[in-house]
Length: 369
Image (tube, rainbow, N blue to C red; front, side, top):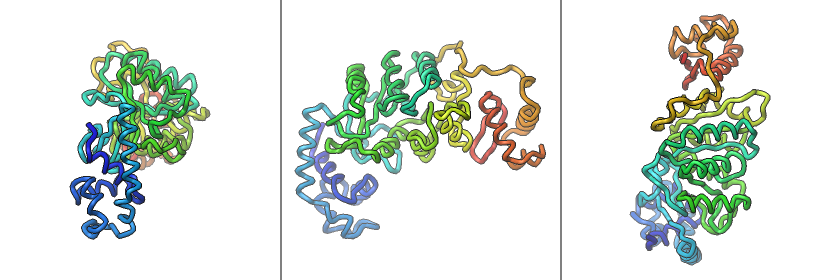
């Protein structure tokens, strides 16, 4: 239900220098957006770190006029306005220190389902598509809601597969609800709503899909879920920012490894190498790590494991043996014990991770699986 508080929240958030963090600071001092709107300018000294410049735009009647138009737009287009300070955001997202003060929503978000964010490049390869298709085939009986960014490539495939298997899906947009970007996905966005899914955006109807909005959007994709899967990405791809946000929120990140010569696997491999993501070695293990309920007992593995270490190279076997005998051994100790420099050990550990033999933890510690 839209209230007076929603009106003043939109007007306040529209003010210059009042971002999400300053917005919440105002609410903590004044108790509501309406009180902040009416009193912050004359009582700014109550606010730690606030000067006259920060509050100078609060109370501008043009922002209140904009907010009134925005409310009408939302009412006419069946858009819900959810406010962080009224505890209306998805639970995990509200815990993030930079959570959006306002989140616009079309459709239904099922709070009881576990969200799972899945992101990747717009230039998806057959390898990435195969992984997504296999993952959704094997999780079709699990209760979760997929989250992605409604871009082309990996995002589109995630939403498509969710719809195919009747899994609820949420799309987070980088613009207001007055438009759809890319336009090719307009029909897909309609299908998401028709099938009981949801569209989210923190941007009001005046905001276009500007470049900087996409990085800002990615923090919502990372923050809304306990785990993020990065399917394929190049160095510096947008999905890297999503993984970085997820790491900063203490969320799990999983990355699909690939050949070091494949452009759109290099970003994933680098996340794994830097211990910023866990390696996806098998679909079965991924489903288990996600804590999903009742997956199929028999799952055809994307990366089958060898039952013995006999097929390992000499250096692989040497390193694997030391890690197996010394759980959570760190890189420096490992290098000292086997008399190999760290720059030669790390590529071999990555190979062992890809084989599903070793798992790495923060602090460059390793265990045998």
